[in-house]
Length: 188
Image 1 (cartoon, one colour):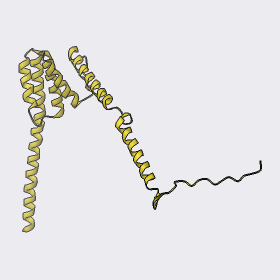
Image 2 (tube, one colour):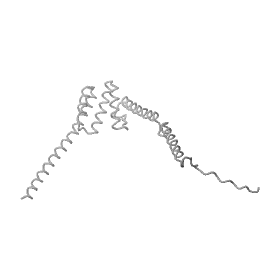
Image 3 (cartoon, rainbow, N blue to C red):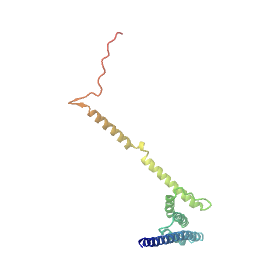
Image 4 (cartoon, helix red, strand yellow):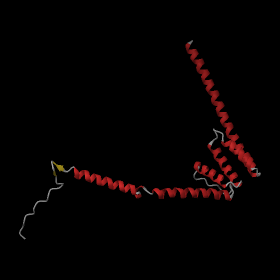
């Protein structure tokens, strides 16, 4: 009887787990098309000049916690395009910065994006390069840092002082090297 109870319990738990797994997979599968359709709807609103409505649809989509990364990326791109079209260049630049955080090598194609959006992305990439070069110049390479050389010099001086300071025998300094022997006077 005990073996049958375990078998029944196992069957119940297995059935429960399979049901939960299938439910979660179906909700995840439904979420991706819903996000894609929301992006498509926002794109249609944007194309029809309804910038506020498109922006609101994307902002509500971006608030979803389980939004897949690719969907988030596409929503951010479209939102940046909308902000640029609304003449909110600062907002568009901030969104492009987020886009470049996700995908640093993002290169919008001329066939898919307007030229001024492409120029804005290139401008933000250029700013990032200048900023990273400025950091390199400010801190320099490890060996060009003056504090590196000061610490090396200090270490060498301390090591020399320790070596020379420990060369005492009794109260007198021990000679580090003995004097060379006298050369015999030879017949020249």
